[in-house]
Image (cartoon, rainbow, N blue to C red):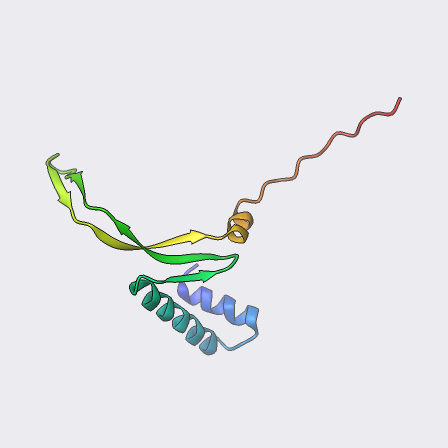
Length: 103
């Protein structure tokens, strides 16, 4: 699903115009990016948490020539899915239970 399809789906679900849904989505993304850039968290209970994480400096290998290179420390954006989101994605089929025969 791309952004245009997401806007259309949100507009239909929320019974609003696509222009309004696009404004809401744009504002949500801008606020989320700004908060994470300040090293804050955006926590949406049941959905997940957007946050900034520190990645330590490390040594890597250049795949073209095999030489060791230094990779600088960095702050990266991260997302951790919430329980409801994980459960929705990880739906397992229900097992049929065998009924015990009566004697």
